[in-house]
Length: 329
Image 1 (tube, rainbow, N blue to C red):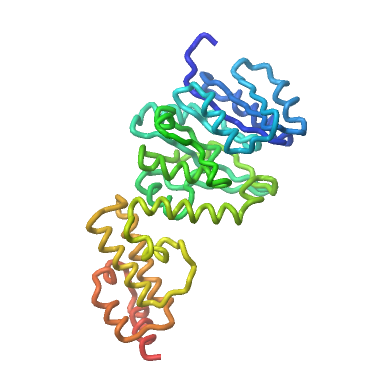
Image 2 (image 1 turned 180 degrees about the vertical axis):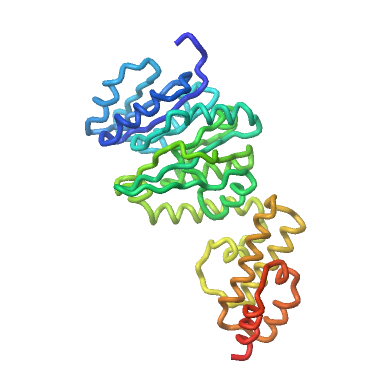
């Protein structure tokens, strides 16, 4: 190509012939042209290979797995092959908008302390269309990782120098949630963001992994969140299971309130999460927990009115009275 490759775009393909042509075209038509397009056919038995080979663009680097290695091994292979300064993800059923790569490259060029940037997406679900944009700033993303994955995987672009520091990229122990697990590790190495623009059309359909493996994904997500939170609260994981929704076990309000307040004080002293995200969440959780409780005792009520956290939220007189009345029911 006569010029240094700056961006490596990795697209794994497994029996993706239905939308593959459109996905490939969306990458080849990017306004940013200085890239290599690594397409890895993971043992497809449909027409995927014929579609890939029909393109003669020299930027395409075609790799064929003779057997189906599955997604994690295929992604890791792509990252091993990639030589670009930045690495972008793409799926075989999605569509990248023409300026997606250009805008993500510009962001990483201008923000050298950031190692990952995603985008908002248009959700395509049959004939319906909606939009999804997670948090855009790092402080909010870092906190959101305690609850869910705040990136759409095929929308992300990563700085290769950050990825090269990892012993493992996608970890096979977290199948069907391997991207979420990777982001939780990267949160301790680099800043991350989402561009507040909808630069990817993301298809929702029954054949995708998130649809076929929902139960496994949920189990993996809990394990990932526990591992992530252990970094911040190594001695206190037991008492934050309710606060961070790791457990759905019913708890009495006196137990819940002590957990919330203990974490509130702990975070005020240690500032585990910056920007007030955790404290704001705890204040709302404190208020809602008392409003929804059905077993308030007089002792718990006095605990409630004695804590400063109670007065950090806006209350109506009706809400205060509702809690008081519960004590004497």
